Image (cartoon, rainbow, N blue to C red):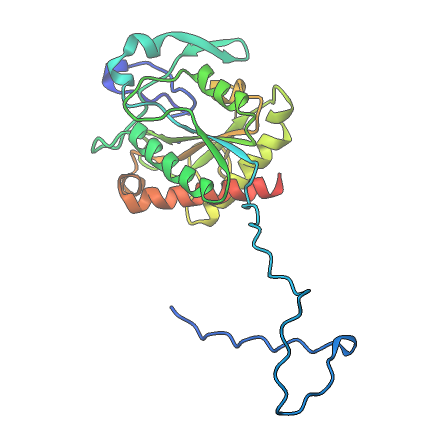
Length: 284
């Protein structure tokens, strides 16, 4: 993934990357009476028998939500206050594999100026709302789009401390290549721990399949078939939980910029990501 910065921060590396109605069904037929419980015949003038005192009302206990007990950490890339605080986000922090990298960066934007940090924050909120509605506990690495950071090592720690079943970092790319478009999913490789092995690879594949099946094209310029193994992304290197980074597309591509800049487009991305997370949790 190429570096993505605003003019104020030329040369920064990216934090983690930077990508009606039908017929009414008939009522069910009444259950046949068991011979052992049949009552004697009554004449037409006989009063009806009272209900049996042994009958029990139907259970009203609630069924646990599908995602009950699951924890997902959502990491919206960058932050709205980063550009105004170069000293803080230029500070070097551990990024795994012996690397030290800038705490954070500003991210990229569309040619019309719509910033990546705003896109990722909005999409993450929509993903989180969809997951929470399924009973999944959602933790965010940042609570607003006006702050600074947090640094890449802090973001990884949030996922680790939450014992997350899945950590998904949401980004968008800023390639200036005229043909560059499409999404890709990055994961740590070679793995540094068990969670970065098969669990993260399974999460990456499930995420790729879900977003692709929802109508988004895979990247034409990074990775292969929508997957991108990486050894230089701190948020992935430092994670001890199943973790991926989703580059939703290229903000410099006119078509993808239009999608990311529209409310309907952001909702489409969020729905695809949420469904993919649910699919992963169901099989985890």
